[in-house]
Length: 258
Image (tube, rainbow, N blue to C red; front, top):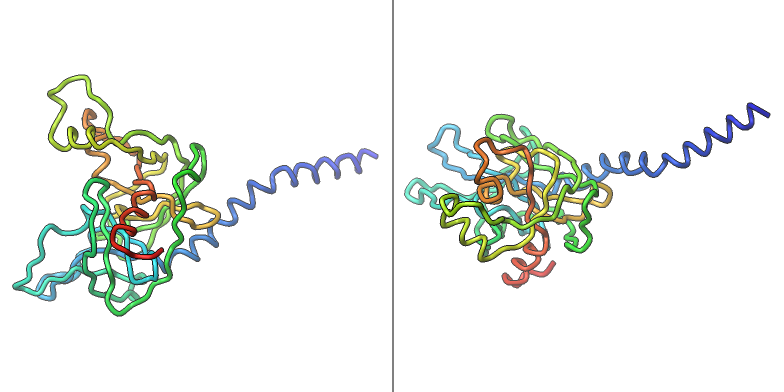
């Protein structure tokens, strides 16, 4: 009898823990599924050494010819005299390829940009809805942190949604205000706050459900942090994401079906 009771106890314990293990086990499959959709975003200038410059991350949407990234990842100007081009880097390591891209539409308020890739179709990621996002849920993001140093190898981080909070909060003194903060206070919207750490180069990475790979936001390393953490002398390791709602709106405004 004691042996039977012990067996039943172990069986019950395994059943109780199974959902936790299944969620953890699904992430590797999700990463394998979404990695072909992740691209580096940068510029190519053949006379430069090195000629390729990786500036951030993007991911394929719609029919696979379109890429979403952050607006601040896109260079303000290109050296057209030297034939500098906006490009995306597809694949990883030595197997990567480079394709030209053009900016189709931008949303500076939400720091988003829509690109179109020349002569290539990527597997597109599925877009979710903001009402699916709940605090405490486990999400992941994949991109190219410190890409100029670590190279073109997609890296995945994961963390929980710590909060859904305004992009800018009122400050205690007018001396802490600047033009950008005033503009964002006037055009306030909620962003997703995560307990995972993103790095330069992660900007534009898709934030996705660890089980399904559905995109719920776009990682933003610079734009949000400048406002949210303006009063901090040493900014924290908190990571923010622009909700997928604004990605959907950008695609709709560009008449791109998704």
